[in-house]
Each structure stands twice: as C-alpha cells, then as structure tokens.
Length: 177
Image (cartoon, rainbow, N blue to C red; front, side, top):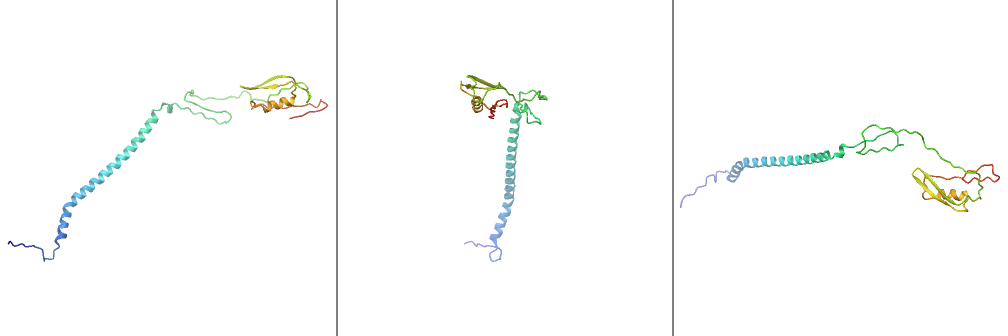
C-alpha cells in the first residue's frame, strides 16, 4: 500500500480556515465587480425613472401649449362692481370704458281723486319694466286697494311696488300704504 502523508496534520495549522481564506480571496474581485455592476444598474434604473417622469411633465406642458384657446384668452378687469365684466376669446382686444348717461329714477303714475270704496272699472292693466312685463285683470268691483294688492302679490312681478297715496283734500282721508 502506498504511503499517504498529510502535511500540516499535527503542525498546528488550521487548514480549513486557510482554504476558506484562499477561496474568498479568489471570489472577492468577482463579488466586488458584481456589486459595482448592480449599483450602476440600480442608478441607471433610477435615472430612467426620473427621465420618464420629466418627459411626462414635458408632454403635459406641450399638450397645454398645443391648445389654441390658451393663446386666445381675454381678461376683463375693472375697479367698479356696479358693471359686470366678462371677456371671451372672441372679444376684440382693446380698452373699453362704460359711461353712465343717466341713472334710473323711480317712476310714479297718479290718477284723479278716487275714494277708497269706489270701484275703478273693469279691464286689464299691463305693467312693463324694461323687457319684463305682467298683466293684472281688474274686475268691475275692484277698488284701488284690490288693484294695489293684485300688483304687489303677482307672481310675475319682481320689480314694481304699488302704493296708494292719499291727499288731505278729501273729507275722509285714506292712506293705505
């Protein structure tokens, strides 16, 4: 039988640790290179994600730039809240002024003297204010109070207030306001 000799046995050397250290020393450059490549790939993936996000933002901006309505906007401004200001893309560019020639004033109608119990007469009353108007039907027995109440209570009336004005000339003053 051949002689087998094991060197190191009994010499106190720890052969398994030496072998592990040699194997680790051989694989360390490969592991280091793999870790470096993995870090580079992770960095590239992050950069691609950031680039994609930036490109989506640019695409969104370009889409809003492509909308012609954004370039045809008009702005209306003024210091008075009495006049409503509105501008559309069809408005002509320029400066405009509003001039008030006259302010609206209250309008009053007055008839000849009529007593508070006297019937006025039968017919229809048409009351118009601007483009709005409404009708009141007057019967043969209606008094001024009935007509006033019909005007003020009309569902179509939102602009006119009827009032009866009396004069002290009558022996029985009647003031029903």
